[in-house]
Image 1 (cartoon, rainbow, N blue to C red):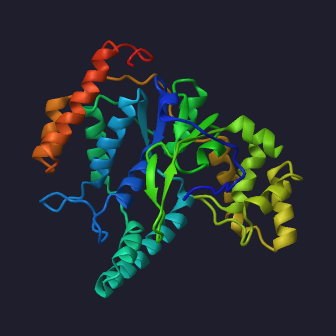
Image 2: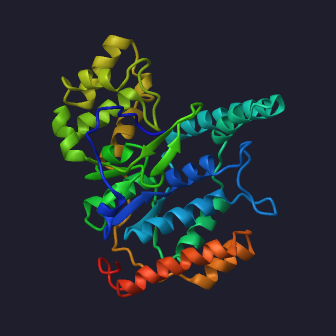
Image 3: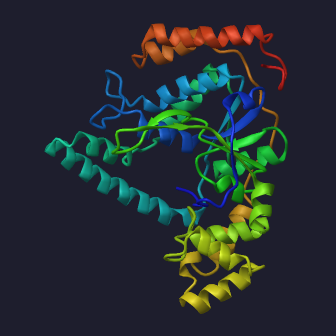
Length: 349
């Protein structure tokens, strides 16, 4: 779920067109989970081909990424590597949540509560190693590079933005800010008209741009204090302090300068620092954000779509509609030709 910054971050609504010609480093796992959760049948069953293979990740990745390309965006998907050892507790908790959701999904189906069934089904999504590899193959056929991070994908994406090879990191989570990304873009892959859950109305979801320096100035915090705020609220690596939300956390860290001071304060007020992490892990978790494990950043290379390969993968192997896939391929190809074909970075569109 990432760090919940609530209403603390300074957000600016932008258009997809405003990102035209820019490289955007996209959190791959975050995005693929969105597709697996949202692209489902009415009863919550995942989108599958005739062989029973889940294809929601491929459908979302192909059609929505193509839409970004049609708008001139240069997407680079960044995949998670080996998680920090203290993330296992979070992963175990998420597994339990999925198990409970599966039971509720089954019960809702038996009772004929279709809307409830779909809601519970969305929480059961699992991204398998096979899906990850399929996604990388699809991206290559689309002419797009991907980056394999040594650890957290969001930290690698943030590094790409800091090094100037990407304009922004894109994710629904706010973690990229704690990892030091100068710019975060949210809602990039879910832009458009969306139904409000359990209500008969729709809302327009638009991309948001958040600048780290602007948010820090508005909160009068350093980045280190922002990370401490995250530790209080809870991250993917620690539970956080019970009943401490973003606004309370902000009040606490506003008067604290160091991690040691934070630990002393939390121990004195709440009786234990366990919510920040287990003993020495607190500093390790803090440094996951401040000194992240990232690989060397290189300039991403873009190529032309492999139409024949895409038709084989999507249509021949996974039953995608040939006419629709070909139409998307033709449209992206047309745009690339109008812009002069494949050139060096920055000149592709």
